[in-house]
Image 1 (tube, rainbow, N blue to C red):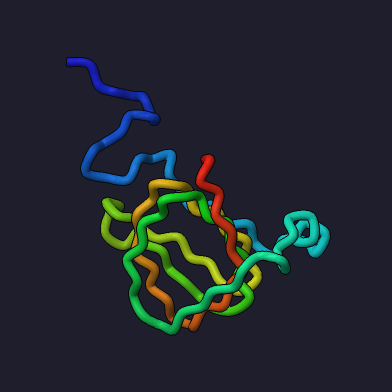
Image 2: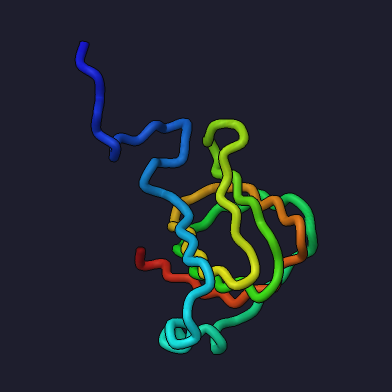
Length: 114
């Protein structure tokens, strides 16, 4: 029996491997201006655990906070950590749980075309 070495192959019980959270640490002020971040809406939440499903790609810039995002279906203990000063892109279709240890304040935008 041949093994499947295709990294794009989807496992129906898990989030597909290509759905990963991308974190850009401390982007330059010129990059933030280019994206128009200050014109994006703001959102915040207190510390706690929040299950989330992203029906559109979200790009957000954290002004405050600290988050560990546990992707649905990932091995126990696997997470992506981000916080104040990080530019984060969360792909459409991703399900995860945000474990917020420091209250979040962020600018965000959604792009449903991706």
